[in-house]
Length: 267
Image (cartoon, rainbow, N blue to C red; front, top):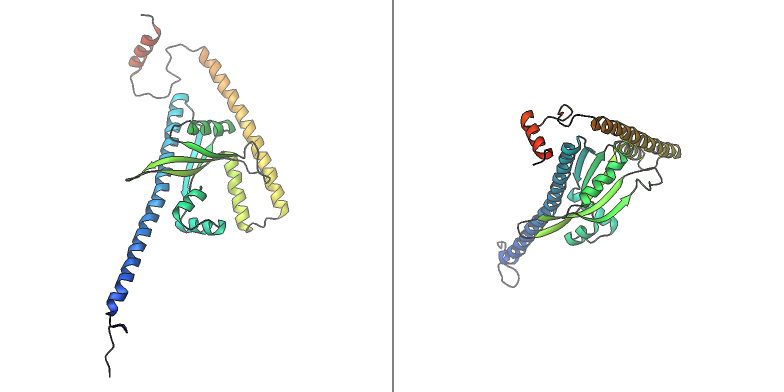
């Protein structure tokens, strides 16, 4: 019996024909994995940067005005599988540059505010930052969708400083009130339960609920404005050196009073 040959027909060793191809495939897979990892990390870093900016605005606004326009902040990052499925569904090229250019909601942040005016205030504060570029805006508060959906959508670009380059990365930001967020959450659950085929009666009920939520938003903001106006009237008659109405501050009262006298007394 003839032993199995370890050579091809032309006499070349079999190993020399197989190994280079296998090695090149492994190298290519490693490079692809590295590119995908850095691709996803860039969106995570962009989300982290935007969350830091939002938290700074929240804390500073609270310290200055004793009130925060931001009630809650959440974020999400699409999975690589979800990104590729969307690219296939939309007919986008399956390469990272094309995906980056065409899919702009890979990273997402949702900001929940107390009142309608707060949504625009937060939009202006974020858009006013030097390294944040607003690429696109959809105002579904001013012009709600047909089903009643309301929210303020922004697509922003922010520079992410990687080890070898500065990469501009897009982040989708949704800004809405508590009532809008509650309605949107319920609407999503209903459409998921019915797999998109929601009965007409429920669709109409959802639209009416959206109208009710909007009326609630308007009413609550009017009440808030009245309270703020009353507080400002009370403050006008307060003693200049009365600290009873101030939030806790990490300085002794006497030192604060000394600073105050230095600011108001003539030289």
